[in-house]
Image (cartoon, rainbow, N blue to C red; front, side, top):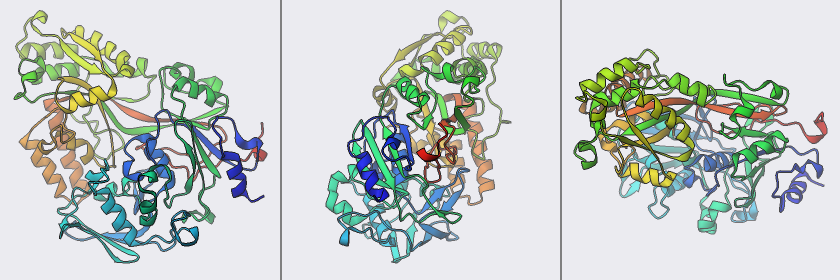
Length: 549
């Protein structure tokens, strides 16, 4: 029986974590669990990690990132940017085909052309679609009521920007910028979200929402490793156990090939306090780790024109600086996170980006200095300082109880209020709270993505500047960076702006996170990257016939 039909047989109705190898041990199926439900397999809605991971197997764009965050060719085999930094010209491969679908003549996937990118990018910007990714093309100029995406010919695609924006090439690596086929979109309508067609290494097979998603190998995929066509796996099977401890137990039993991240329910079982894999698992699992472009922080509302800020002690820069000096981040990481992560001492830019600089003047643990700063703010007695409420979600309570205890020792009283994630997001977006937990995971590998949180034109709720921090100096540095084409020069500007934000302290950086992955010993080629993207096209897993046990 042909391998494709065997896969159909195996995966029809499959909805458990049990291995399908009993049906055909020659098949290689990579199995992982997704705690968060996938809401759409349409790349236009790939906002959350769950959607991004699945869509990354199904689609391609013009460009892609390697594991070192270097921008590489993908469907575009080469590209140029003009001397003004506003016109991008892409030369496309001619051997990329969409997955098969009945909307194509004869049901066979057709070749991708530049016209498909014109359609796909205009679709992202269509108000009727309401894609959360519209911002990725905010710098694209309008021409005669049309966006400036141009198919010069079938294999040449052009984009015009309204002004130079050096990070734009990195933005084009995002899943939002994937190519999709117009005829399938037209035939499927809104149902495209659960019947996707792309060009990626895997193609859609079946999805029972909240139960199981199955993708199968694309035999016509265009990328090779040496002389072998990618991908190496026959299929990917995703389950949706919402309980992280249950998923961990499935991993321990061998029913999952991979888990990502660390949860309180199993962190001490899996890791030592020093952040190493426990000896009893050395022969069973691989542990992969590296810096993650995710900065965890506390935001502080600093806009003194708001009533909620006028009487808050947090309006004083010295109080914000005292909080930054008032707790031991190293101890927090060591004892509450099993040494996973890096103390957030050096501003918003995390390790893994070129402008990260551990020599910046920042906030070490110094309770004596913190007490001096509190007095400098005008609070001579601890009882003079009003209590401050810190808003968070339930999974961070342990961290903030530690913070609460340490800040009490320097005379600051912190009350912890736990909110649902959606409520917290709404309150901070609409400036309803003074002090809140937040994080920023990079959308693309450029420091601009972090520093944009502190420019005036991005004030919440329209933008991500939740602290409503405003500084003409920082605004001018940001604009200068966008006019600077040389990477080395931009790095210096980014560091200068980062230091300015550190000095004014509209945020308290808690820690810089780590990508943490655990795989079964027989998994090869998974790798890690600072954006925590999941790419399975180079993963190898021995077939059941090759297993030793």
